[in-house]
Image (tube, rainbow, N blue to C red; front, side, top):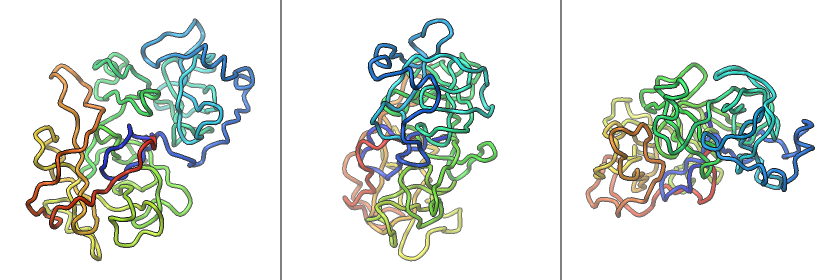
Length: 319
């Protein structure tokens, strides 16, 4: 699974999987006849909200990249003709303004803006806690990517103990960890390799800013997740140490995340904090993140705390 996270907070640079700038994307010019019939004006008139606003009979709400937009990631939704009836998990074919998946489904081709072969994914109502369960996916959580333009049902996971389907990895989605398909470009994916989104890295790695890494030839590079308890035998190498990825002192930090770290230089911090938890009846985890209070003064397993955070650039989509 892949996306630009919601504007990321001064935390680790995770540039989402569904919204991935320039990763195998087309130039935005679709070849399907449907694309030729659509202008910016008609797309605006037919604007919709996935999982919420119904389109006319024979139509469905399709996330797409507006003309002139960054081809990596979808940034709008419009009603388009239903061209096929492929179901969740089936192989599909995508073009700019349509695909051959059925109603309420989206052909995800590695990144949200990418065209070509992909897999049908379930769209959902980003504000309805039972949205995925209502669509027959009780184990999934509805997560809204790209400022709400791409709400999809995602399976949660733990990066140190992933249990994802074959061919998928556990990636940070902007609100929690979810199973999604890796999509590294040429020369990307391995520890120390340049990256530009979460899914640019292979499973088990995260896309972090160069300033917190020992040797990174680009603005961002892949670095391993690590176990703060040391149960992984210390995967960090060289001068890098295991740094907490979540605020260990925050009351709303998921207890299951307290052992998650990332290999980075001593003194770096990458605290992530979710918004206040929703009522128990809600299946949705918070989709907003906020910078925590200043790092605790006490030293952590990774060394003394500092203001040198692993920050991500604002405005980069997660998928």
